Length: 258
Image 1 (cartoon, rainbow, N blue to C red):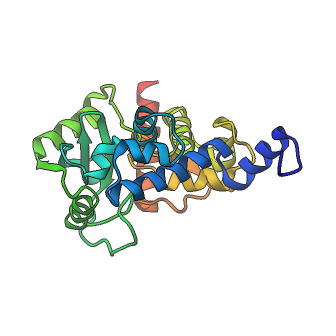
Image 2: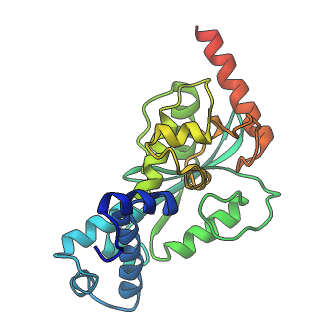
């Protein structure tokens, strides 16, 4: 191969460097290039062939894997995509729920005093800022506010503990880490190194930490159960006090149910 090393060695070293495989990395690049071409007016068919895919259906699969949208939906700014948002109270403060027909895609805690940050995804914005960034990202989507839907999600999650359909829109590596988070039992904790091993990437703790920080669905995908190597509560997106409250809540519930 051109790198002058064996495929196995290259795969291993690349994963350590990037936190994802070469195949996943190339898919991310293809997704980015396809998005640019579609925004410039290229057809789905032309875009698929220009980025080296064998058919438009492959382009569809690529977009669903990385963005949760079909290429046609992405090109049109979310045209014909129905997004429902609603706000409800939870044991940890007011939360903002965003869902599509694929399931719950965002659960964030609303803080009216939150300061502006860069980007939308996974940031602690006030409600108005969250909605603005959603509308900018999906400029032609159909948005509907329904706080009853938000309350229904809150009840399912925090009261009835029903199985929740979660739409994990992210790179394959990030979805793998998020699924590993969901394998951490209630009331237990893991370090970032533990999580890296659990996800099958024992030497990619830093990349794992980045994926944890990008978790779009608070509480359900329990990034609050991950601690630093010295067991410190730090760097939780929604605040260390809230993280401590979550861990205490789970510990009490687990002790009560035992």
